[in-house]
Length: 380
Image 1 (cartoon, rainbow, N blue to C red):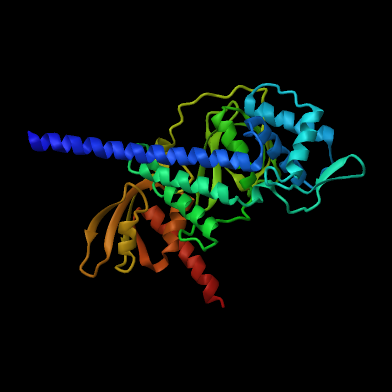
Image 2 (image 1 turned 90 degrees about the horizontal axis):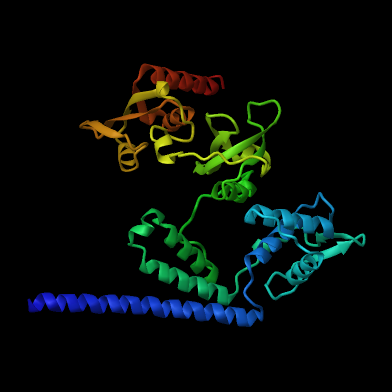
């Protein structure tokens, strides 16, 4: 009984120590934020002001339009309407003060906003972005404290789906603070088209707003304009997609962001509520092309001994099972999934290392493409 009591007491002490550490970190975090505000000699910015700054910044990045003060006021009003869902009257004086604040060093922006031809605004430095402003030492201290506090809770179930995110954030903060190269290197394609649409797409899903999209697929001769109800954003193979339905239709569509030409909100239509389940929708699919049950097939692949460990430790699909292991180390695996373009591309990527055993239709498709590929080299 005495030992049990001591364990309980020890557990209570550990809990108090844990709470104490969190409280101390929270206290230091608050103190850092307060000092940051004092250092900049400004009151904390409200959300609407930040939206206006960001809107003005996006406008002035567009060098193909001449921006008057009236244009900037209208853009800020539209942005606030999109975020708030209600009309917000932005005054001329408010936007003038915003421009003055962005020009100053109070926010660290020092934005090179100039007036030309008496009434038009632009960035004197065409490459300038407020998002490119480096963080101050105080900012980095606040981020460091935040990361340390998050690490205290990384084993809780709430963070189970964020595995690796805290480490990536910690690495980013460490790299910026110490001016050192990254420890965690992420694949990225900074020149990928359509990434500028991510924010408006995210907001449309979050706030249940219908979109007006101008879109042109690679196979289409001309673009089309339609209203779209977006349900989720999906990243695959370093490309982004938005999944949803055209207005008035039931079919689920997958749109590539790099094929979107123009995007805006369609506030005349009501958002179609749905019980769309992304996990269930992609349950039988490798990649992003979801087909019907008619294209659902049982696949058997033979993997050579050199690639077997990679395929076993990183399965192609959650349905993957090893059904036979041979003396030379090669294996036969089976999967049940849709026969789509991405599956064929996956198998072709292994070339001679993987043989399709079943079904015959998939085997013939891979065989045909390998023969065509061979002919490209044979002719030379």
